[in-house]
Image 1: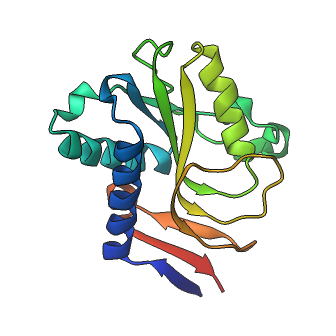
Image 2 (image 1 turned 180 degrees about the vertical axis):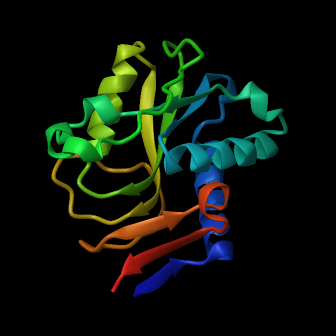
Length: 177
């Protein structure tokens, strides 16, 4: 059984909220770049890039966009055995050196995914800055990592599932009860 944290409308409202906050804090759009963490972070990042482009009155293609797969940088890789994640694309098709990177993921919990993402990003160069945006912050960090932009804070040690239209047919965030 699952409890709904965000329904379709609330989900989009949170994406819009994050987009507005990023836009308001990054008035130099030319220095901004969006990077989504595979899988759901990429879908959220694309939506956020679209919303920021609307706010800035520019084409979405004018905002540099990248994707990260952190699978091979995970600190728990050994524990997957035969259940190894499918490796997705990591693409950073722009020079990061003068960019304020907005790293986007669906859920922040322990901080381990973000730590691995920072390792991958640094393999591509040293950006001007890196900020973190997440749809759901579930608390209970194991590492000293905090998001700059949060859709909703929902502290729980229970599994939180983010469903996106792109992969699941609907936007929804649920928690096991």
